[in-house]
Image (cartoon, rainbow, N blue to C red; front, side, top):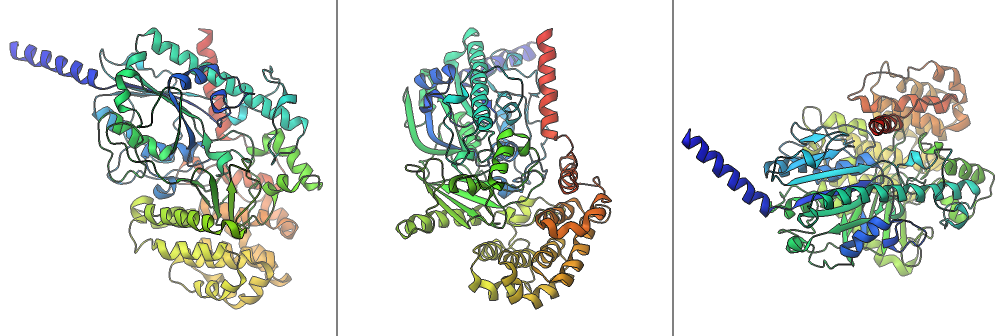
Length: 638
């Protein structure tokens, strides 16, 4: 018994000593808002609590969320690896966690931290056991053991996209005084949505203030490192879901108490504004560095604080994959001044019909004005098809990113520099997002997309990246290369080759009709969809009739997997009036079927609703948010 008492006493002493050597860490996060705060120079914003935090702490002038939508951004953050590297880039998807890798809270818990998340997770990676001590609406650092250091997240949902369009609404900011960005039309609906967005950011700030007061009241202010950030740009269209600066730039304010200033970024100063480029992929290694754990080499970010902080990086990166029911493939990079976007699917507009986005009044009125020919060139970019293969914007002279400099000879060196940075990252992280989603899952069967992606036999990244670049370049002189690519042994090369011919319109098909016709029997469903899409859109009447029959067959969930179905329905939707002969057959298609995870369940139904002119099903995102708000409401009544 004496030995047990001695051991217990020693453990308590060691635990107390350990706790004293480790700071508490508090993350205050909010949804769907950019740096529209007073501390970032926005005089229209009302954010006194975060502004005060910035006065005694420091803000990062250029922080990116890597992805412009919550699930993909949070997936990158929780793993310290880019979504296109793990296969988790697509909005509301699910892939296995890479073998032998951990989510960052697991490292913190192993180091003795009490880790809580209140409460949104929304990861596209399957969560291992033991990630959080508690992750729900009741999770709180107050539940930790006496003397135990904590890491706690409180996520505020009031600024979410869905709250910008909720009516009736009690106004805080005057819509007449809103600055309408150049890409949005100046209408009453747009001003109302922007003003309401600012109102919701004010509420998020109030929530942060309450959490900060809790820390102060508990006497923990000088023992707690604080981060405030949002999960991506504002919920307004052309911000959320689009990987330019407007969709990726987030506020990030940090406070290191004097006691822990040695762990702060090297440039840290009270009231300071750091030029260091940081992004979500950096947060996991930064946390580990702060608690004295060296980040593992497989983490793809760079610590910007703590014992193992790295030197400032020259670039930060963004990406866009499937957004709910609509496919796209975009990569972006900035050096802090210039923003570069590579559109690997230029045949698709920025503004594909994502049903959730079209619930916002701004989206609806903006589309009506575009269709009526009443938008300016800057306001029309969002809807234009095709979009540019490459985009380059100067944030100093064009903060709204509406004047594309990619074709300007005076910016050729900048364009080449950022293009190389984007391609270098794709090769380094082995970007499996260059595979069609269904093809990625097929190749990763029995493994994980990340581990498959690091096998050059299973995933010859250099060849596939080149094929995607050639396809999306839109250069007619590349047709011979595209035709040859249709015979490649790798299905992804064949897919990009078929899509490249599709992107070049009827001229592309005329030049490659034999190769496209031969590819109709390809073994890959992704290639089949691309080939039939080409024939249906650009072929003659006989080719179109046959292709439509094939596409509606590929869209049948009873005989195809969910990825083939969603791809085929997207292709049919792009055909417009050319798909009219399918009207009755589309109504007969099943809207439910088997999927590898429930997160994929609603996409086909939304696409079919759009094609059939019916009401789309309630979005899971909205459902989840509503349920949480109801729980909070009930809790408030107690």
